[in-house]
Length: 173
Image (cartoon, rainbow, N blue to C red; front, top):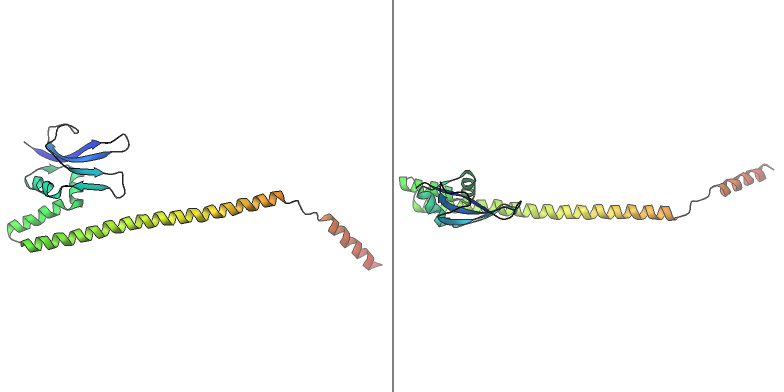
């Protein structure tokens, strides 16, 4: 029986939520499955992925073929890298300690990237909020100035011109 690791869609229209399952290749997408390995929520930023690492690694080692999207998810979580390192261990190219240290270094690097992205998103959101407040304050000041200009009576320049003409006439006499 050919098994696939694939996504099973749930959620409402426009808000998908997926279960990562192992299913017979002939079963329908949302139909019967053998085992549920985890979940994938693409609606959050970054996407939320929860998988049972050990079960997934066992299925991949037993020959279950992931679909393209599941392959990307498993690669992101490190399942395929761990399988690769275990292949090196079987061939004798690596020791168990080397496999664990390499995988732990990879996990630490990956966690650094994820936290960097999360902090970048939070700081960008804060900067956008601050810029919106500054723009709102400038718009409020412009609106207040327009109201003041509208409500103040216009300054009459004509009497001042008459006084200047009278003053020039007196000076000429």
